[in-house]
Length: 247
Image 1 (cartoon, rainbow, N blue to C red):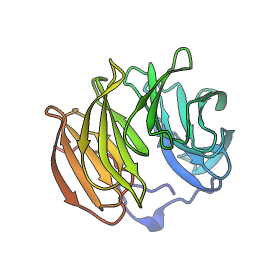
Image 2 (image 1 turned 30 degrees about the vertical axis):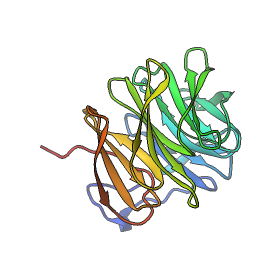
Image 3 (image 1 turned 60 degrees about the horizontal axis):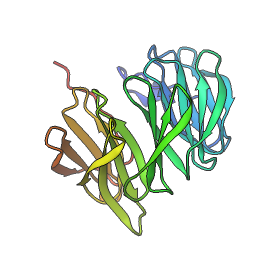
């Protein structure tokens, strides 16, 4: 669905038929193309946002889920949960150029701000994989909490935050803080049950974590690496994004 945010009227939305089991959506820097991972079709749909229709379909590894475009806009990395790999898509040609085995059940990916490395949450390995984008090779794997889901870097490229969800029966409630220079966990913060989504504010001062099983969002002070508040939201919050207040 393409919705005009200014109009904020669902009746005016454009419905776009993509593949089966659409999971995540990203948009390029010009908002000209949207990319949709289709978990049940093992593909990524390319959508022309102006015309509101699919203009391409890119085959990927099995069950594509989270995906991100590199900060330089050249590549898209797609985490394929059943393929145990990431598919790398060349944006200019709209085709998969390679697949990198990374570990069990990769869920989401995140580039460092300089585009040189990608961090991939491995849900069933309780770990995060690190890939060098220049060599397209797995560099290392870092142990984190149970069933990590989403990952997000600070704007300065110093830290990567990892939300550890666990399972509904045995939820985790932690966020692992990875020092990108060391490729090691330097802090583990306690948020609330089922830490799932994570995002860092544009200025890098705050980190926000959606806790799925608790129905809450936690706020982390990035300077002190401490949880400074948790507030209740709706039931089952998953992904989370950030937009600064207008001035």
